[in-house]
Length: 151
Length: 486
Image (cartoon, rainbow over all chains, first blue to last red; front, side):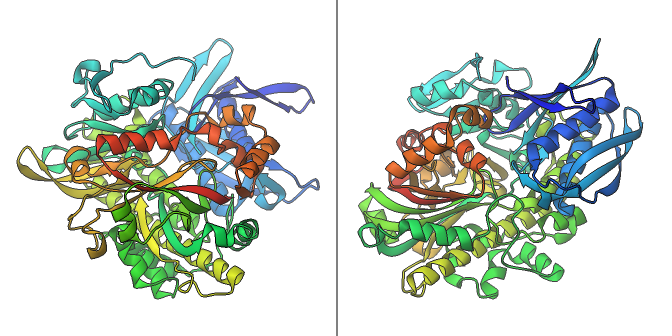
């Protein structure tokens, strides 16, 4: 199992996501302290897979408001990720900051920040998040999700 | 994948294996996998066979949930899966049975060059093709279209490109559905899907998409080769691409919608990615109308890519493409749902045939074929990996009788992308390929490693099964010389 690491704000290495083996596509396992944190972490892991920042200088970020609704938590997670994938492609942005405001089991409102894709090296074309073997679980320490993306 | 699939596989003959209907409660038909003992070992290494059983839950499925020998684990449907559903018997259409890259497909062109004539120029030619054809992540097209034209593309498909001067009517005759499937309705496509498709016309894309300069290295059926005008040593060109962002968004839009159809129409499937709706429901009809738009967009895209490749050849050799004999042999879709007629137990039935990583393989005399291929059967193009081979086959009557006129679509993945990245060294790989006389140009190292030959099954094994099972016949084999990866 490959582990991917990144710096958190206090400059400590933290584990962000694990890759799940899948023959044709790409699966990840992600944790979060609460549901909001989980959704944010899955989103930032997704964009780590899509692109790596190469531009050293700070660039102007674009703010986008997102509203999603669904019948279940799992569906809400898939809709959230697919909305981000789709907006990233149409607006040519790589999202780097995710703030989820109001959220319950069937809806969420978020503000996401994106930077122009030109400042990034694109690594993987992610077509969509799928429902295949989708898992969203609560444990003692928080929440965990497993998502398979079509790449 | 470490855990072997432990499900039941009953041997029917050397090339056919059955997952019995009672393997899982809810299966409406058995599963049938086309494979030999060797390929079966690979198939047991992931969850593809379980997915074959899952597809057998679809309402209205006819005869069996089929899988070709290049089958591997996908999402919902296995890649290499074929399922036909009957509208008169509650049959459904499932966007997951087509996939996100709607009408991903492949086309093969011939040239009148022999390998000996241009062997010293392959490297430079590959570089010219790489510079002239937009490829890779986030690439935008060399061919710009207006919003009005984009709607025309969705209806006219490859015909739109030909009208613009990017090819000839002869090209259309040599394209499945003449490059435009009837019934496409742009109003079934969301604004977001338009946006996502915009600016990508005439781009190759990334992942497993490619353009390859090849040479024919083995003939199997001399009569068919004569009919196609092919001989040993001849240079061919293969293009593999799909509907880009437009198709992804259409699939996403309709999966989102059809997840709710499962409860609305009381459909029981073991995987929500098999979300579907009855063929005669508004949701089902609307999906097919939108899917056809993406299919037509993909045919227009491959026509544009071929045009750009012809121009690159003209620039490099300073001769016209006609003079270089660059005519299209055929273009096939391998991610699509088609409404086709079959004889089922003595009755003609109109079925929705889902081909998810499978190729149409109509036999001689089929009315859907152009006059020039009525005698040979439909050309079937099977791309392999970048280090081994690709094939030209023809469809058979047996395929029409057994597999709803379908055969395999490629080599089939063996290793995950992550495993390929972990175990394959980029520099070593390029050296190995160069030693075989193969030049590779790609926009990213990552994609090249992920697509390394070791990550795939041997296409020779896959094609042997479909040939010996009689669901298509080998015509000739190609080997790669110059490869452009997205």
